[in-house]
Image 1 (cartoon, rainbow, N blue to C red):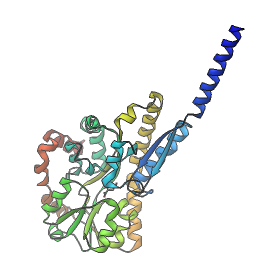
Image 2: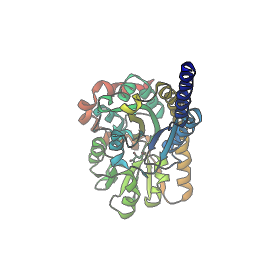
Image 3: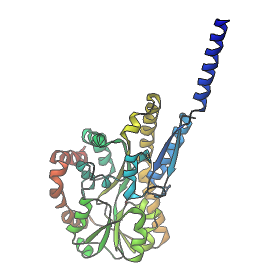
Image 4: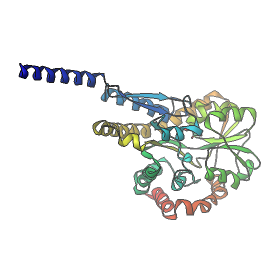
Length: 330
Ligand code: LMR
């Protein structure tokens, strides 16, 4: 009798436990970002959701919030640290309060092309920077490309002096602030969601962004000219809250890391073609003119902006800058 009762109890207990396991709530990962869905970052976030939910059914749910619909620029980092969101991918210009060396990515004319950026990010310095904020509770999971930035304004910007006196919207970055000051222009920090209106109302006269952001935010409709300057980089670091990530069941974390690697490859493979597609759409719209610079003209912009490097060399580290320059030669 006693034996039977014990067995029955054990059975009942294990049934309850398995019931609990079945009913356990999936881990919800909120992925918040500020751009449109048909951009490199927007597509990456959706692909991460798809693969995570396919491969970890019932264990993980990913909620993607695009276009600053959950948190905008000013708030997303704070929200990540508070645990209100688990994944974000700010542009590399938005980390200066957490890691000064990450400012390297904003230095104008540092990288010759996106392949050089890729080599640098995959190299030792790029990898070191991914982990440089763990003491602050932020873990970098990967770099996603958007692409090289173009200058836009309501006038033709062919020579550096054409930018003089104009108000340019900048991301929250001291390097970008100095970049426009070097042109004797007036930089104005503004969150991404406000740029279109800022340009439309004349609060700012110009901006800098890759084609995918210009097109998806309709900035070309309120800018008469775009100069294909490729003068700087707009890429992302996908980051998570260190405590959240380390607290995940190890099998779930391992699978999510594999998925993140796959998504990173996909985003980085397609970012350039998304920008080319959006450049064509901008041209087809007929709303803005794209100016191309000769080698000599582009060199003048480089000379005007390059003094900014010296100002940030101590914060970034001269060796890191050398490593980035070396990535152009490989
Ligand atoms: C910007 O603020 O211009 C960009 O960082 C937006 C983005 O996330 O691409």
